[in-house]
Length: 91
Image 1 (cartoon, rainbow, N blue to C red):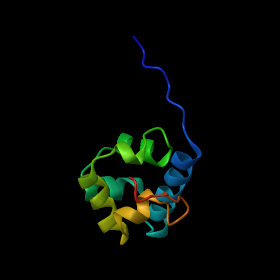
Image 2 (cartoon, one colour):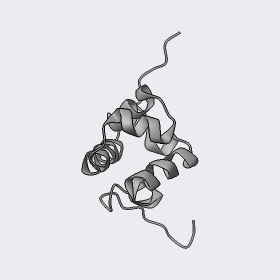
Image 3 (spheres, rainbow, N blue to C red):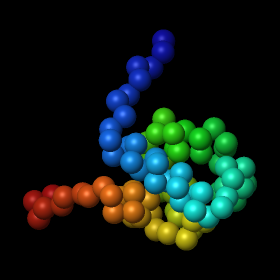
Image 4 (cartoon, helix red, strand yellow):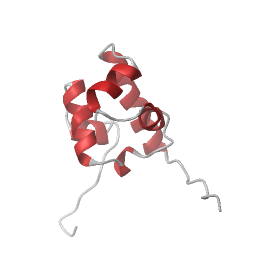
């Protein structure tokens, strides 16, 4: 039985676009990133194309990407501040 496609939110798309720009800004190919992080070409492609949500990835893997790109996990999750999360004292 095929899995139903999930809805891609605007935040997912913005995050994926930013994630791809981080790689390009560092003048790296997908092959170079895959080698450095130890992931698959398909996994990286899906993250950059919003087919896989970055939020569903392993924190350790995202930390590896962040270190490679010279940024933070928070920067990746917030797409460089483009995505805001409201946190209240009740949460």
